Length: 298
Length: 298
Image (tube, rainbow over all chains, first blue to last red; front, side):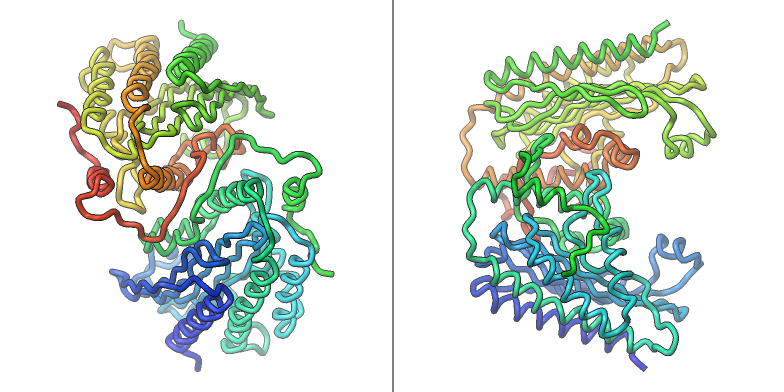
């Protein structure tokens, strides 16, 4: 029977593999390691990269925390008392070049002392400028991973990502979505290890997908105006993470490790009052495509 | 009897007076005007300044909105149905020079069709570098305004500001506080116009206080490292506004006018992972003073 420690060990290995793959693709930036303990139980390892050739700022975080279940979860699950164990890997990467997209990935496992347990996760892409080929490549790659396990996964989890990564007060999606799933448990003749195998496949898909996008665009020339647009889109990323992202809010509310939670924030972001890109510009074309329910497949 | 329209008219006059005083002190920046309507009733006038000599980005917003009370307020007030009317002026100014502090002011009036009504407001200062003389001047000015009306106001509202302008996940205050009050209604032999007179005095105190601080520091030289620190402190300002500020959250939740609500965000902000200023530096001294319950009076 698959144990929580085996899952956490595998996640830690995934963190190492992804950092190694990103360092190789970046050719300059190196991940620093910050190991931390959680007063209530467990801890984590934050790995942070800054000023790379391709990655301007990014984090690949592993954590495995446990202890008394926070009151907020108990209320949500209608439980009076239980211990919990949560482990996962979280990634956000902000590139230097505005033609390289921002990416986010998370895989996680949650277990309670009453036997309840589930997996969750997702990958989503936030291009500063939407590129149709990249979007097709990204969604096709995710669909292939999903289809190896269950033909219903991609459509279901793609829709979930559209709903989740939505900046309600801007009436726009954070980017071109991807997949998102939560509270995933075995169905039919599946067992826990089948779900874990899917989560592992999602985790392993991350590095090849993103290093491909890095290589594709890292040398594309850009000007000051395109960099300004990148800063503005990063501002929207900040707005999503601080206002709407449930993981961020939960972490900040329950006294999580602030610096690890907020590693998702960009190195530099900007806000202009009521900025609206001129009609027909690449910026306006990108904004026009930030809608739910778009089919990005070929 | 003082009507809601008289209050709204006075607030609109205050907006004009403050914009005029700030333009005069800035000597370059001009406020642009953006008039907007609220689909459910009412509207506002956003006045925005960018790239001034002293002010890098700022907004002085007036609004008077009304209609059906949002569900969230009805629940909080345990009411089943009522119309509301809300009017006020909100200001946030981000200066160019890191030695000039960020300032925020808000004065507001809220009334419901069932007769319930109250005033609220506050002013707080967020220096990138805390200056003792400025802090003393700022708090003394606010105490003088308060003391003209009620000797209990300053201590009570100063403490309220310490609690309100607190960045819980950073365990630090947003700045050196100021005053904050909400649901202020007549007590003893006061009537509504006494409370309004206090709110007017708070509003009128804003321009002399901030233009003094502008003049005091606008020509102080600064270097790139001090500007970087300013960007980082602005990042904390973004965190407070998007994660903890009740007004911002309420506005975004209830479909308020996003661009007017988020005019409080800085032109540029930055995040470094786990940044900690070196011991004994002016930056470290500032952070050490970002605590509640500090007495800033002489």
